[in-house]
Image 1: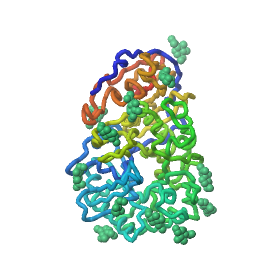
Image 2: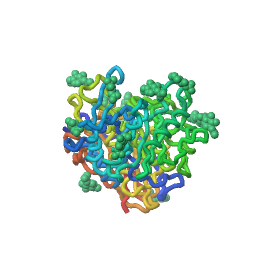
Image 3: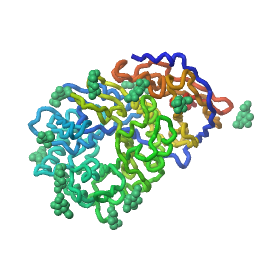
Image 4: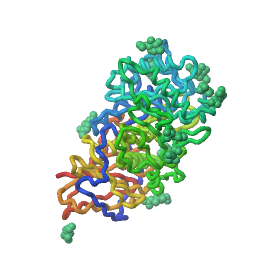
Length: 529
Ligand SMILES: *[C@@H]1O[C@H](CO)[C@@H](O)[C@H](O)[C@H]1NC(C)=O
Ligand SMILES: *[C@@H]1O[C@H](CO)[C@@H](O)[C@H](O)[C@H]1NC(C)=O
Ligand SMILES: *[C@@H]1O[C@H](CO)[C@@H](O)[C@H](O)[C@H]1NC(C)=O
Ligand SMILES: *[C@@H]1O[C@H](CO)[C@@H](O)[C@H](O)[C@H]1NC(C)=O
Ligand SMILES: *[C@@H]1O[C@H](CO)[C@@H](O)[C@H](O)[C@H]1NC(C)=O
Ligand SMILES: *[C@@H]1O[C@H](CO)[C@@H](O)[C@H](O)[C@H]1NC(C)=O
Ligand SMILES: *[C@@H]1O[C@H](CO)[C@@H](O)[C@H](O)[C@H]1NC(C)=O
Ligand SMILES: *[C@@H]1O[C@H](CO)[C@@H](O)[C@H](O)[C@H]1NC(C)=O
Ligand SMILES: *[C@@H]1O[C@H](CO)[C@@H](O)[C@H](O)[C@H]1NC(C)=O
Ligand SMILES: *[C@@H]1O[C@H](CO)[C@@H](O)[C@H](O)[C@H]1NC(C)=O
Ligand SMILES: *[C@@H]1O[C@H](CO)[C@@H](O)[C@H](O)[C@H]1NC(C)=O
Ligand SMILES: *[C@@H]1O[C@H](CO)[C@@H](O)[C@H](O)[C@H]1NC(C)=O
């Protein structure tokens, strides 16, 4: 139940800071191109996809509800990528009755099964989710005598069992630039060998009936040098001719946020720097091919557990907003879900934590579930659970809305404050303002500092609605709300339930607005005519 800690009842707001927030009424030249409704999409680990989606006899209502909530704000179908490490260890068995059977070996991996077998019922899980499209992850590593038949089964079953308009793309292999390092290819395996294998495999699954398109290369890293050189920059060049068949529709490159030496903490300090290497570099690819990969990604480390450092609870929800919108401010970002790829010439910035990991029964002794947006099934007595990052997803969906707005970053020159403007039809529609100062009642006492943002020179508007993403504190894992709605499983099984005021209306004074945002809160300001 939603019982806020005692401290919250007595928390008082105290003015700590006043900041002038200059907002342009029409999109500045640096504003993004329109951000499509499927911008916020999801990546789900292959082996756990049936846990998220369910099947015909056991549909997962929570996942369906949570995705529907988000679509209600954006009007767009999400693209779900079913992939990750486990996609490269999937074997199709025509006679298998169950959709999926995962084989665990804790000496091999505590978080993921060693291999998975799927039968025709696997595709029930794709069909049982409503109003989504898929990127279906195929097995690249299998290299015994059955590998081609296995791939052909994966492809032909997908074409047979999924309505064609729900198949967005195929993805052949996940992070295979790491193939030699992870022991799935010999040490002398080169980028040339990779391209060769990829071309051979895609040509042998291509069909005359429907010309298949791919999401690739989904490399884990930037410029691996050992044991051999792999690079998202060079794989496309004339030596390799990776896209020689022209079947690569979207370029996918994974990027792990905290992979710089400056790991983010709960507060914003070092976070502001993370955008610099690859998240926020404004590059606007003019054509759809990959010559335009981000020029300066210096980062190499890629442990998704690093994301734990993004804080806990509400702070993690706010991080999700920050990262999503930061991505939106990149002129070339087209979609967010799990790496740093391209979408018809645009970078798709995704990160790998949306709803990837959880453990099966019996659960292994380690937990890596904190950064997921929700836990779809009970695991070791916990769950189903809607997790703090989901509130960030809601906030972003609300901020983006239905119309495909242009997004502009308003640089406040601060590590603690972020602001973004959304423009619809060339006119200012909304603002998102984030106060990244950490506030936790247990740590900071009952005075919750707030900052007044003064928005000058907006004579076209007389009033605005203010909706808040908040919780008792930055570390809160419960009692989180957006516009007064809780999506907690215990309350409405993932449907929004009104537990606090929807928002407030503020009026302009002499053409300027003042918006108060408390520490560890974010608000959406929607301008009314
Ligand atoms: C969709 O959002 C509207 C408000 O914008 C709300 O009235 C409606 O109940 C929502 N529907 C669902 C299914 O959440
Ligand atoms: C459907 O899901 C339930 C619950 O996870 C599982 O017990 C059952 O075996 C699944 N059915 C198929 C055909 O996979
Ligand atoms: C899956 O892994 C288990 C344990 O290593 C092994 O016995 C089994 O043969 C593997 N199955 C497939 C289909 O690779
Ligand atoms: C699917 O692929 C398998 C393996 O190549 C093949 O035996 C089977 O005939 C194919 N089925 C269809 C419907 O194309
Ligand atoms: C084939 O796959 C195995 C297991 O993943 C790996 O050890 C081996 O190096 C691979 N061989 C080749 C030639 O790719
Ligand atoms: C790579 O190593 C394998 C043994 O693992 C060997 O059979 C093969 O000839 C080597 N390839 C090259 C190009 O050196
Ligand atoms: C392609 O990149 C590789 C490095 O991976 C380089 O050695 C090669 O010269 C490049 N080829 C062309 C045609 O630029
Ligand atoms: C990766 O290597 C390519 C080719 O050597 C180079 O053009 C590119 O700048 C490098 N990128 C990084 C981030 O080092
Ligand atoms: C599972 O739950 C039991 C009882 O609460 C607990 O002792 C055990 O540590 C939990 N295991 C994991 C992996 O969390
Ligand atoms: C709350 O306490 C933490 C730890 O001392 C500190 O880093 C943070 O700045 C404090 N927050 C506020 C809003 O004072
Ligand atoms: C929220 O959960 C995280 C682990 O996910 C934990 O570290 C943190 O202490 C929890 N916050 C509170 C207030 O219990
Ligand atoms: C109203 O705004 C104008 C320009 O922004 C300023 O010159 C004037 O002093 C303001 N009036 C009041 C009463 O604040």
